[in-house]
Length: 276
Length: 191
Image 1 (cartoon, one colour):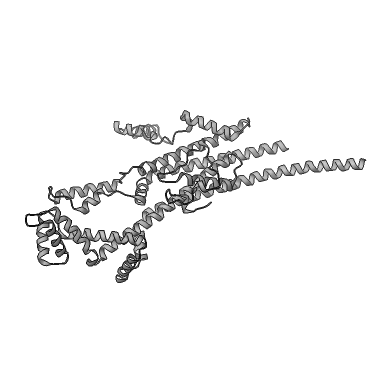
Image 2 (image 1 turned 45 degrees about the vertical axis):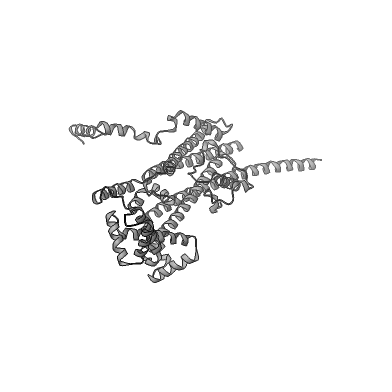
């Protein structure tokens, strides 16, 4: 049975049943409709069903039952594997983002800080602060001008905000952007992140492993589901084998019986010849 | 030998400790079997029993042998049971997955605690900090949502897994018995 990734999620599928030479096979209504979840590709499911059906070549309705089960269980195995890999990937990138938040240099997110601060100041203008003035003040504050920092702190106090929360928010934004670029394998992001990792004596594998440890409960749960589905699928295949063995034994007996009858016919012919 | 007095006392005690007492408890217990109805035999539902008969006819074909018919019915019964279990399991996963606002109970509790904390500590007229708002409006997405649902529904899924295992086992032995009977019939015909 093919385990191609494109057999599964909708949208990422490159090869669809339309291009497949195999006919779309509907399982019997009495076996129930395919157990697909939202976003799963119905065509890919039927392509898998066609392939398994062609490979097994059912002889009766009981074989059809087993085929429906094999396909449904194989689909589940693919579903859980996909979920596991997506979860690990997503959590790995989340861990990378956290790592960056704690290790980013101020220079990396200074521009984001200035932008956010400008927005906040412009939303809270006073008599002596115009829109342009707010922007200049934010830029000066981001450049560590002590007078500007004091003035900004006063304004922020008045509106129940503090500098740290704005800095953290800017840092998180930059970290998120860098992680996104890293996931898309953009060379500048890769270079920068590798620099941070090297500086802290860490590696991307260490970050990912830490993330994996945090998701261990979920991963174990998914692994268990994969094992159950695989075990049941294999049991179905064994049952098909067992039935085939029984069928072939019955066929062998029938052939022996036919051969026996054929011998009788030959003898009769020989007897007829000798009689002649 | 247990004395009559002891037997009477045991029976009285057993009567006193059987089943829920309160009206709410009784109502809850009365609905236990109706949650997914999987413990009920397929023949208790007229639609399912018709499906069992239809499937049994498909399995047996034109064979009118009563033994074979009974064995085919056993296979069909297990198969329809299996279908019911799988449908119930599918519902458990698909309903929360298609709910765009799905949130786990653990996370809802965390969010309520945070709101209470902010209300106590912050000025009520001040806007909530962005980071708090971001957390409050966040919802599990993509693989996290699926993983959260799996974590939340583990108990229910395990319960259904037991039903599925039993139905699969019943079907396997029913098919083996059906095949063996078919073989016996063939052998006797050949002899």
